[in-house]
Image 1 (cartoon, rainbow, N blue to C red):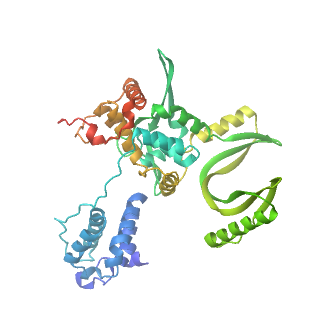
Image 2 (cartoon, rainbow, N blue to C red):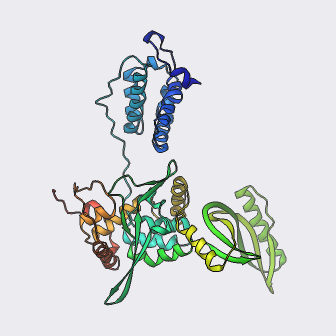
Length: 435
C-alpha cells in the first residue's frame, strides 16, 4: 500500500517525512519492476543498498539527508562505485518524484573500488595437476574443462551438449580431434539463461587440446541411462547436484588377543567422542590367528552427488534413446546455481591442496597459455570475447576455422614443451603496441 500512497503528486510543503527505507522498498524498487528492469539489475541495487546504505542511512528521513554524510558513506563503503550508482539512482528518482527538494551534487567523489589483487593464473603444470586431482569430482572437473576454454563463469554455466562441436582434421600423423564450444548465452541466478550481451561474446571457444579426450569422456558420463522395465523404458536423467554426507571409518590392525584389540577399540572410541561429541561402537574382527581389525567412526565426508530424474517412455528402444538424447542435448552441462558452483569450486580446491583461483580466472589462464604459445593478440581477443583488450585493440576479425585450429596447435605444442613448466602473466607476454 505504501507504493500507492507515495504515487500521488505532492506539493513541497506536503512532502511526507518518509525514511529512505520506506522510499527504497515502497517506491524505488516497484518503479524499476514496472519499467521492466532485469532481475539482475534490481538485485544489484538491493544487495548494495542492504549492505552499505540501509545499515547507516535506512532510517533517516529523506528530506533530512545531508550531502556531506551521503558522500562520506559512499567513499567509506567497500564498493564505492556501485554504492555511488545505487545512491545516485535513488536520489535522482526521489527528486523527480518530489520527495526531496534539491538535487545533490555527487560529482568529484573518489569512487575507485578498493581492488584486491587478482590471483595469478595457473601455470600449465598447475592446470594439469588440478585436472588430475579433480577428476573424481564431476562438478569441479567439468568447471575446469569448460572454464579453461576461456569462458566466463556465466558462460560456463550456460553451455549445453548441443553447443559442443567436434572437428576431425586429417594430419600427417593421422586424424586430429578438436572440440569447439559455441558460446552464445550466459546463465545467472537472477535471470536464468539469456543471450550474450555483446556481439564479441558470441563466439567459438576452444577446449584446450590437452583436455580434448578428457572433456569428451566427462561429457559422455553426463548422458542419461536407459533401462527396459515392464511395459516401457526407464530413462534416468542426470540433473542438478545435491549435497550428500557419508560417514567415514578408521580401521586399525592389532596384533595380539581380543583383550589387546578391545583396549585399542576403547582408546579410539574415546578419541572419537572427544573430537566429534558422539559416541561410537567400534567393531572388532579377527582376520587371522592373533590379528584383529578395529573399525571405528571417524567423522563425515561431504560430497556433491547427481540428482536423478526418472522418466518412463513407451516406444521402441531407438525412439527412447533418441528422446533421451534430445532432452540431454539441451540441458546445461553444469546444471547448478552460480553460488553453488562458486562455493563448491573453492571447497574442492582446498580439499585437494590446490592454489585457489576464482572460476573466472580459468579464462585468464586460457588467455595466458595462448599468449605464451605465440597465438596472436587479435586471435586471443576474439576467442575470449573481449570488447576491449589490454593493448587497446578495438577492431575485431571474424575468426575462421583455420585460425582457431592454428591456435589449438600452438597451445598443444607449448603444453608439451619444457617451457610449460614456467609461470606467466598475460601482461608480461603481450607485445606492447599502439593501434
